[in-house]
Length: 172
Length: 169
Figure 1 (tube, each protein chain N blue to C red):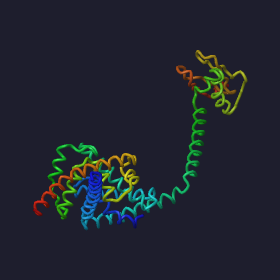
Figure 2: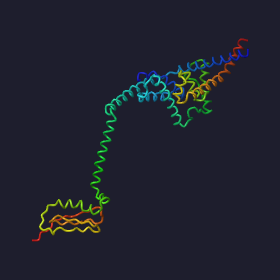
Figure 3: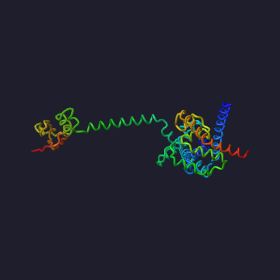
Figure 4: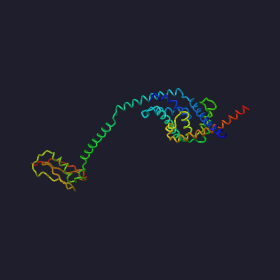
């Protein structure tokens, strides 16, 4: 199992970054998750189980960190934080405007929906795997995913209209 | 016609749905770790793996069969408890008074001491009855010796002084 751990380092770090959006905190969370995997390696038998287990540990560590700081619990972002997220510059991501807007839209989602969407879309987990990571039922995952996708479509739709208007003006 | 427009919108929605997830994945894959941090973490993993492996090996070698140790510990504890319990019953002075009464107990221990004394008896009349205060027990000293109880306050503890009887020639 030790040989497989380096393969998961990047995945774990990316998930931690998704949750906390802080480089140093993400490094701490990811490192702790990896070391715990070493200590409890006898409990993990399959590579797939290791992947799920690591992501779950990161999620738990993040929840613990939020509780220790007395901040919002996981999935309960405050309105003020929504505003802050919207204004947060995308420093580390050099990408097209379309990608930036999509990421920005996802950050406006409540944390539970955002995390479900992230695990499905970015980590390419199945519904049941996502349920395992977040320790919720598959039905809850489906519900959150459906709402998240719906919200994303709504947020990105006006942009389509603007683009279409712009295109029409250019054509005219 | 209207139906066709709705289907078109629906397909467009699905298309958008795929697009934004693709964009999310693209953005996600651009996140990279710091090489120094990754190297440090991998070193720690190697150290932790080595440490836990050694601990695991030692634990297995020492406690390979926990049932054996558990049974041995239980047996040893049982034996110790039996020994201590027996010792406590034997040395507790008031223990017999609850079961046999003061009379029997009062005679049991001191008489053993007295009987152990060397007998240099001159006359059978030297045997005396020992006063026991309020107690009704009595003790007879070995011939040639005098015995007297010196503890009178505590009925559970009886101390006797045994002296050789003087010879008056």
